[in-house]
Length: 171
Image (cartoon, rainbow, N blue to C red; front, top):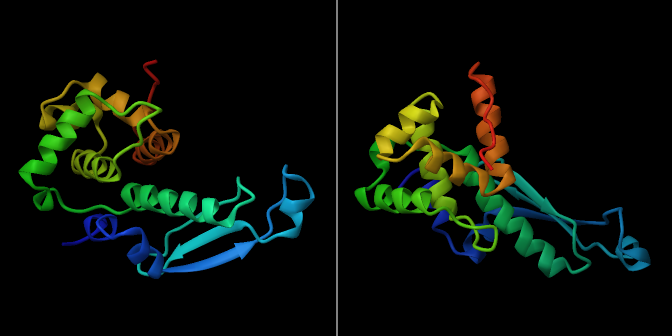
């Protein structure tokens, strides 16, 4: 197993064991307690060099959980794997999720984001070509990309870097 698949299948404890863990004091709202405790968390994933952080909560445990979730999303967005590595089951899951994308209340499946980015990468980030390959409408792919702002932003940045027209929100 290569690329993002190996990392996204790890348990939280296994993924955390691969990370450097920093605690620090964050500025911002939260009063004196926030300024007096090292509750902010930064994770650096040693094998990939990717990092994430969370500073929202005054609880270090909550921030660590948020940072770990953000790291999983960063891995899904940043690491690519050849389409040949995608199983037929993964392709089916991706088709079902893009046809009925997660809502803001239901979290995004990191593997599905990574799979979609792999397919988009294979088709030079042309949404219509990737949608055809997945036997989906371009609207379904667009809806899936819009579920999480970081996913949308990463897709938009990749398209712009390739000289393609910017993504337009459909909502």
